[in-house]
Amino acid sequence: AQSVTQPDIHITVSEGASLELRCNYSYGATPYLFWYVQSPGQGLQLLLKYFSGDTLVQGIKGFEAEFKRSQSSFNLRKPSVHWSDAAEYFCAVGVRVGSSNTGKLIFGQGTTLQVKP
Amino acid sequence: DADVTQTPRNRITKTGKRIMLECSQTKGHDRMYWYRQDPGLGLQLIYYSFDVKDINKGEISDGYSVSRQAQAKFSLSLESAIPNQTALYFCATSDSTRGQVGQEQFFGPGTRLTVL
Image (tube, rainbow over all chains, first blue to last red; front, side, top):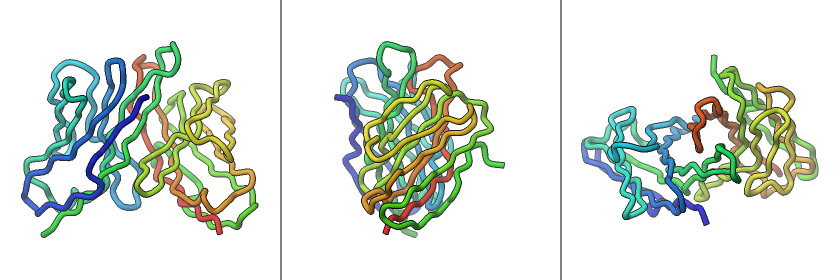
C-alpha cells in the first residue's frame, strides 16, 4: 500500500541549531516527493520537491532534502534554524491514479517543529 | 489577491445541518482537490476532480459530496453534518499541463469547521 510515515510527531530545537525531519515512504514505482510547511493559521506552502536527477534538492527558506532510494527516505534538513521556522511540516508522495498519467498526493502525519530561543 | 480562496474561513454549525464549503481559484488549473486535516493524521483526501466532468472519491468520501461548477470552482458539501466532521478543510489545485504524476499542489488558507 502507498503510504508516508513521519516518525517524529513533535520536535524541539534551539534557534541556530541544525534540523533534520524524517520521512519514509512506501510506493512501488518511482516516487515524486514533496515537503510542505504549514505556519499557524495558514495553508500549506511547498518547500521543495524531488522528481528525478540529483538526489539532494534545494528548496526555499534554506531547506534541503535528500532522496535515498535504498532507505525509502526523503529527510528534510536545515543547517541553522530560525524562530520563524516554527511550523508544521508535511512530507508527501505523488502516486499514479489508475493507468493514466495523472496523480494525487498522499501525506504523512506531519511533524510539529518548536524553536527555543 | 490569493490564487486559491476558500469561503467561509470559519463555520460553526449543528449536527444534522447541511453545510457547503466553497473553493475558487484564479490559477487556471484544471485539477482541484478537497482535504481534511485532523491533528496527528495529516491531510486526508476527500474528493478530487481532474476536470469539470471528472470527479473521483478519495480515501474518506463518506458523508461528503462535491460539485465542480466550473473549472475555477469546486464545492464540498456535508449533507448532514456530524461532530466527527469537525476539522480543518483545505482546497488545493494543480496543473495537468506539466504532464507529471503527482504535480505540485497549491493550497487555499483552509476552512475551520466545527459541528456541535
